[in-house]
Length: 209
Image 1 (cartoon, one colour):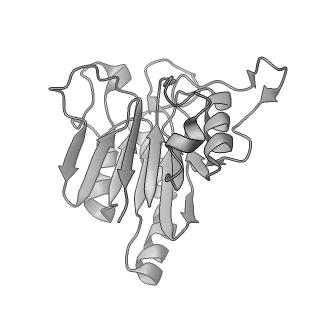
Image 2 (cartoon, rainbow, N blue to C red):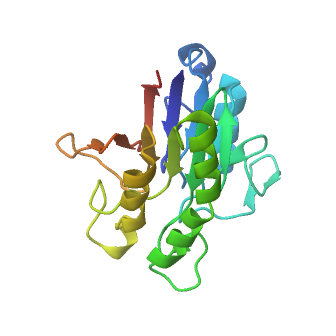
């Protein structure tokens, strides 16, 4: 399965008329947050593949399009925050948002709040272990784990509970955005235990064997 994951910035090479020809071998689209709903909607419609996504800390709703539509989410997309879904045999979960750095702001969480979000997934994860022999294939997040691709400031600091989650449930991939990388000497892919942690900013294609 070929997967196209996007996050944080509209890519002109994707938001183009010939995208269907260029990316016709893509099987699944994943959004890791902070992208306009119309952009994700365009990718899904043009490539004609399913989309799963989470919201980032800068996402807002409703969003308004140039043709007058009001979007409260991505039409036809699957918001996987706090959920586990199965798509073409892949078990995919999601966790939206960033570390809370502004009181009362949406899509921001304290460490304890994110721990609670994960705790609600545990019963289904354990059920997957019993039924499939694995808890999860892909975790889709906006923020990275603590000290893996994250920043030093509070706004871009990763969650410690994400490291605990990886240690316990070992998904094949942990995808995130949030941290903008412009230099080639900064790691974007890190293996932590059995999990490959990938910063997809702004777009990345990878294969799930």
